[in-house]
Length: 395
Ligand SMILES: Cc1cc2nc3c(=O)[nH]c(=O)nc-3n(C[C@H](O)[C@H](O)[C@H](O)COP(=O)(O)OP(=O)(O)OC[C@H]3O[C@@H](n4cnc5c(N)ncnc54)[C@H](O)[C@@H]3O)c2cc1C
Image 1 (cartoon, rainbow, N blue to C red):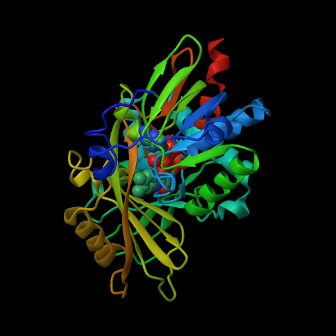
Image 2: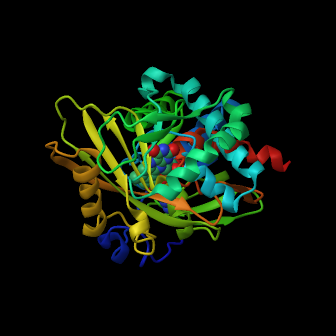
């Protein structure tokens, strides 16, 4: 058996220096790793949806999901839980470097993706609520606000065939935000979910469907053979008939595609009495976002303050960004209110020069579904399903 040297790979320091290959028993190998039909790498929203779609097509196949974390460890368990279609300023910004058709297709993919997710897991399991997505503008940001206000009718016209109605409208600042224009631009159809519940429901479903999920196993390298693929992990080697890579922001560690990691930092307050804010909120073209959850305020963003520093697949927090998030809580979102911060974390997204996800076959047996940017809740189920369908499209 060949083992690659693990130095400089994204493992714990102990593993990266001293690697002890696992001696699998006959039973372990035969039961879990022999004759694997489909291996999915990554148990985020894309990987699990891919595995579930494969199960639907191949009821008797042996399907394995490999996950490097003890829990899913990328963006799918770290995000803000917005079931969103893009704020007005984000859509206008997208229209600068994408064609109208591309923007239309992206929003459509989000709309259909959220529909797919809701249909598959149900609103109760997702704790889906629809309180609208509000884009708020700083008082000093008159130019952008006026432009968005003026253009929102055009965006409504462009997206009318998707939503079947004019989704965006102007609403009064009824949440008492500080230093914010008197009106927001709201997409009435935007919703929010409980991210943890969504991922737990997906995992439970995968297990019920006879899909094996192996945690704490990291794919290090793969080699396509004439029949199938040989995989080297940090625990063992094995072969699979087809390989599906759904590692999103970590993909640059094993693939050469137009994708780079983008870390995003988040904080959440302790529960607050009479929290009056309800819904999802976007600021600065989506670089800041916040919402209510369990009487708390969850706030994320600030990556634009240090785009270079946040281009990393290492989890972590920085004072610069956390201070800015706290400043926004204090001065803009909850002015004059007492709050305490309970928890802070980061997640890793995958972004690139284009917003469209990369869905492609890399060779006869290897496929990838990556680069979901900040919209994986919306398009993750769709991308996972499409990833599972790539082998057929190739035939
Ligand atoms: C802070 C934050 C807030 C966000 N908010 C929203 C939001 O409100 N709405 C929205 O739509 N989107 C949001 N997103 C984006 C969304 O979460 C992602 O687009 C989506 O989760 C991507 O899903 P995925 O399955 O492609 O990737 P991931 O969830 O990152 O899954 C990839 C998995 O692959 C595993 N993996 C990586 N490398 C290996 C390897 N070599 N071997 C084995 N396993 C491996 C990782 O551990 C990970 O679990 C947010 C993201 C972040 C970070």
